Length: 284
Ligand SMILES: Nc1ncnc2c1ncn2[C@@H]1O[C@H](COP(=O)(O)OP(=O)(O)OP(=O)(O)O)[C@@H](O)[C@H]1O
Ligand SMILES: [Mg+2]
Image 1 (cartoon, rainbow, N blue to C red):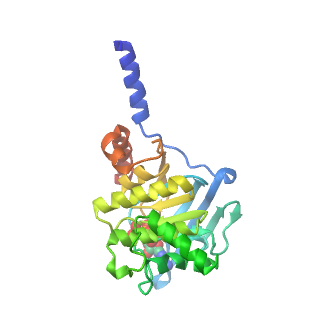
Image 2 (spheres, rainbow, N blue to C red; image 1 turned 180 degrees about the horizontal axis):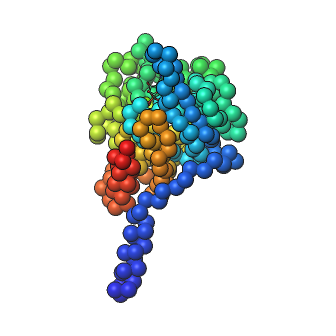
Image 3 (cartoon, helix red, strand yellow; image 1 turned 90 degrees about the vertical axis):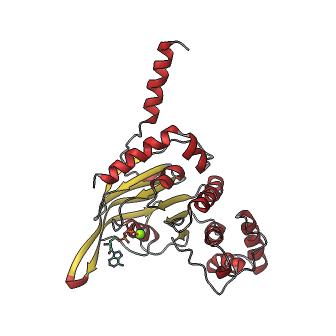
């Protein structure tokens, strides 16, 4: 390669390495979820009000993986509650699949940080429970589907274990099976991997990624872990401290399928995204 070529290559590499800040647009047509000018306030002790999020507009693509990062208390969980219909925004609208959210929706899968498995049900009982809640399928069919899903998350042989007899990682894999089995249009994940040790976390993240890359549900992942956001998502939205507003957003251009540790160890642009997002968060 000549000197000229190599300097052109370096310029191109530098350009790729620079995280591109994007403006999240309000475009209902292409969005799986549109958060449109949403402000949410809660009543606080002493008759006061607290503004949890302020004037937030985010377009969440239907087949995309969107992650939200931001300081504690900036309204991230509130945002998920608004998307799921558990709460109604004080101002603005939440639109899911072209319809304004006015009530709890049945087509949304929600995975909280703590696995929230039912302690009196076995692994298979917990996974079947999601289908029972939908009133879907015969009990034989539910059981067959649950067994297949339990195999897929690597828990074959543990079907009849109760949650107390499982490790954290196994419980979280059961929760993943339970979230995927109903094939929800939209998955809301509130720090789902945060309780796992670093090594198990990467295993479970890869499992989640490989299942999602096949199914391509609309995913909204809330996390404190910037590395997790960049490794998993197509778009990372950075929130300011309370009351949460959208501070920045980045499209993450890594190809799929992704393997988390390959990005961590081999992808030079990974560090650039981390630096930029850390600096956004640090500015607060
Ligand atoms: N049900 C509620 N009633 C009153 N205030 C609430 C309620 N839920 C949340 N809040 C307030 O709204 C603000 C945002 O809370 P939220 O749980 O959405 O933050 P978060 O970004 O998810 O924080 P963390 O990262 O710590 O989970 C906080 O000040 C909190 O006290
Ligand atoms: Mg939260």
